[in-house]
Image 1 (cartoon, rainbow, N blue to C red):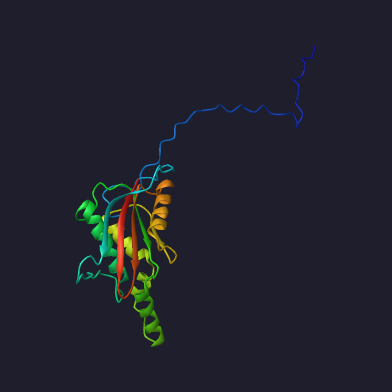
Image 2 (cartoon, helix red, strand yellow; image 1 turned 90 degrees about the vertical axis):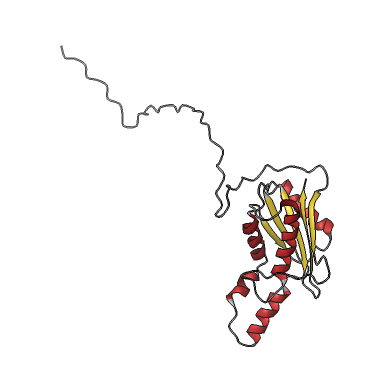
Length: 212
């Protein structure tokens, strides 16, 4: 008696597929990102929130604040008083709250600059060089972006929040405080150094350190 042959499956027969097993994996929170030249890693952005009231003024400064007040020069910034004006006013405000730089123990701090005039000194220097057919100093291109002086301040004081420069249209202190509050509510910063600067003559500027 002949033994039966094993059944042969057709080519199109379905192949059993293993059922995936659900595995719970714990994902660690992202580590803080190191910032060059900063002794501590940059803290991640905080969660968005709604502020319960107006921001508090932790410190304030202005320039000039006395007769004969002079602006110190800043290495790397030339021909215009705008960047020294912003830097000196911001420095006075930060020193009033933290003492000399860096700002040890400062929470995530944003730098917010508003200027109705902008850097007219740098714009004039670029226009003069172009009209005379002269070589334009490379530093003028660098400092023509107002974020350049904010970056200088952030590095010197070791502040790790965002830097924001606003153009004409923000003349009232209330509007500047509203923009500062948005940075805090969005979780981008825990406090804001808000600076206003007008290049004259006469030059004048104010700075306030704001927090909830």
